[in-house]
Length: 419
Image 1: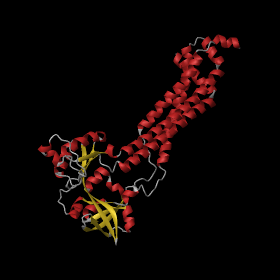
Image 2: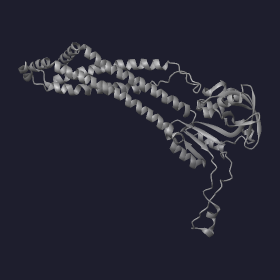
Image 3: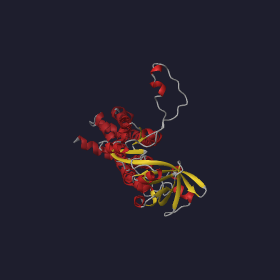
Image 4: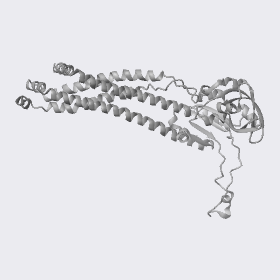
């Protein structure tokens, strides 16, 4: 019975200062709306930037790097056993860049429960021959199906189709920057020259755009078999094995394991993109800081309004306490007022925040450097809404707690005597 009475009294006090109540609720609504919109937009921006780099990056890459031998012939000599060896100007080992036993490694990886997919690749440094001019470039020989499945390769082909790379012998998909330099169109033939002086003609079947201009000026793609043919190598010749995992977080530990198991160099995505991930974390942190600041500012507004209400309703509080209401009851009344403002304002803020996020997500965003992006990116993650709802309740509770404690300590005798 007392709960219903407290609720009725709280409602009456809210109605008595309706304008102030609406202002306080609007402050919470505005804060939650901007909190949701800001986090959704920044989350979408982080996802977009991640997709530009991380979607095109394997979680683990196996490769063979040419390094100086760690064990020199003098170390194997028994005559100098136990002595210190100072050897300078060591030349790299006379080895090829291809991964030995690549077929067996790929077979083992496909049966690993941690691995979602494997995409072999052969990288060939080349020169694009444009008349008497040679442009520096890189041609990657890929497994087209694996590249589409694991790295969404087709999404970055702005003209042509990746299937043409499989169906057309000796074909190439040029980076859009390289294509513009050479003034070529789909169907044209170009000449490339390898570092060994091998000259090879290729037919252009598409253009690729990663969104990173410096990459698009040099990067091109052809099939794995075509690059092997260009180099005159067997079908087992592979310079990189790209691995996608089910759980990206285990990449560092698996990279060490594969390095020891397959005796190749292995680099994980966290190591390769450490600076990029740090930037995403900082942007997210700034978004949360700004959003929480908005909520705290709204909480101060509610605090001030409830403080003014207590001073103006001293008589009402004195009458309540004189008629048998305890300090806890008065405390409950003002907390109910604060939480009502917080819940109504928070609920409206979540609705308006979703609406504003949808509106931002419909705004056209067309740029030549990001061909796959058509509108501003938005992330509708449920956790943003849960955080907003929880913070709106906590902020308004704290904003109402201290004024309610002050109201509960009012002595009705002092108020009536003062009158």
